[in-house]
Image (tube, rainbow, N blue to C red; front, side, top):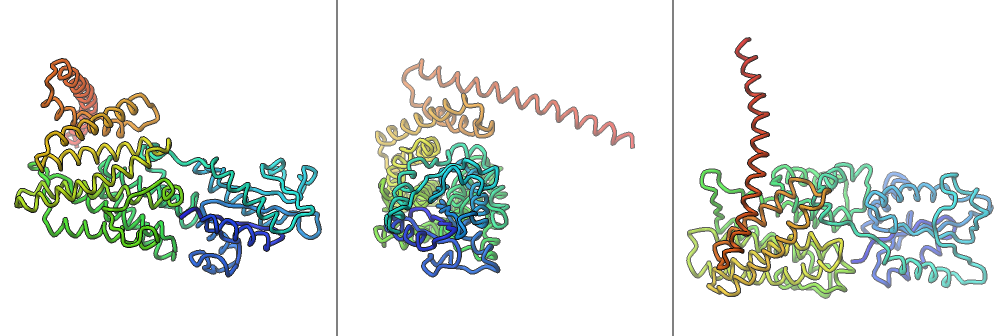
Length: 478
């Protein structure tokens, strides 16, 4: 699905409707500001007032077209449209996507600047001259400009969101009262927020916050298919993360068969909900959902949800195979299933990685998928293939490690996580090294990290021990 587009108008609703007809045919879902029977059902909800209804519509939309025209006296601009401009501008600037706001000034010249508030003088926008043009011609000119502007829209960098995941949490907290992004944009960011829970080991805390958010979403009757899917996926994945925290006594993971099948069934059911929304994907199961660039372009959120779920199933399957009670037939069966999910997730993630804003985050997920694929092949005694995919994973983790260690804006805890992922895999690589110099190189990297980590821990413990000592002194005196 392409974006929902809010169309605000100040004089001629028929023009807004004509634009909607054109853009709907291009795959967008346009919403005429106010009460309009042709609006999609999800935003046809009547709130207490017209203003509340329009706010609800703007919150649901990913882009906006505002049609500025002088009202009937030719001496003023609609105050309601000025309000909508401010509201939407605040929304989209928050995510650095001001190009999602498309302003068209119809028969308004520079001499008419005095019709706008002072701080809006010289406001950016496309000037449209309606003289000697039919309604259809004007609408087509605006639609063409809108479509040309699509290439200018900036996507959020997913790795930066992973590094600063608390901003997603903040937006979730205020989304129903004072939203700073559309439902679809927030749904996309929730996918990354869930992955952050794994990287920072915050699964219990984030699971609770997602559950609270979903409860508020239901209470507020938010009819967003994207948020519904995102929160269902989030609760499912966070449940998986909570179940796969190793036992502190022996650091061993073990998942019963009933738990594994229940989690796998839940992922498949979310996949079915996605396939039901698209004719081209009807009845295609999650492990067979292959993306192409056309689908990604039109259904960006769903594409990421599909690829990320597929990768998560490889992790789920890998954990299940650690169960020492599995018989050989069961182990081989699910190792083959793991390979199927790895292969389709890798294909889809590589396509998503072609976008510069998505590349580093996609590479992180790819590094997991290649590592899991290596392990599944090892279970099937496919040694050569196992080593090949292990090398691919190691290279991706080395590239991520090289990237984060030189970027000051990456949070230290994320740097440490990426570093540990890389070094843990180098330990496995050392055991296979035949070149002693390569072996020494890996050992020196690990030794350097251990030394830095030891010094850091020593400093922290020193301060803690000082505090403990002072506390005990005071406690003993009282």
